[in-house]
Length: 228
Image (cartoon, rainbow, N blue to C red; front, side):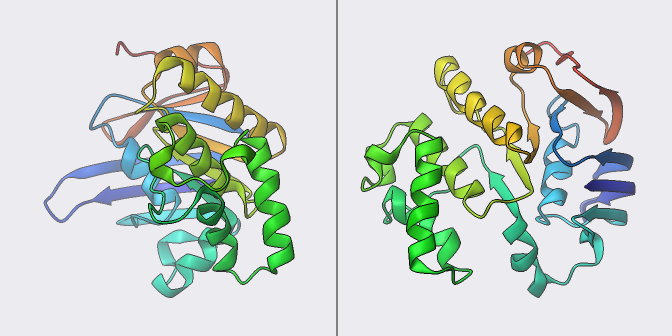
């Protein structure tokens, strides 16, 4: 499903963020990506949604080699991919409903389908009652739930989450994790970069640990393994 082969990433300032990564993530897996600050996690995650391009090596997702993907084709590739950020990235002038619908409007989905699908994902994240509110009227946890709903409205095969609970209190973080669990249970691959030791150790999944731009540990039902 996702495969990295001999991947290196060196930035123009000379920093080597990724130093020879080989890994395969299969359809339907839930994978945590962990490691200390500056280990290369963010670069690893960003390469998966083509925000960064490897200096060398291949990254294959859904049969597409991202290392050679032309910029004009990136938006098409991302239609089969959901991305959830730590800071939500919602459009402040659009309502909850409009933020989610926007992801379907850009691919010219039929209005009838858009309405049905948006309400389905709002139901999944338990926010149907706040469909007409603006992001500024929501709590941080509610905004993240909208962000998740937007990421899955296209029914992507893969959801990439970059520190999705980083700005949230513990109780809200657990609520967000329940949603990711449900998404994964429905067959979507989830790859999540996180510093949340308690979540990783409690809701156990495969753990890929990165240090110095290399994978130093890859365990099924692994633990976080670092002190926060």
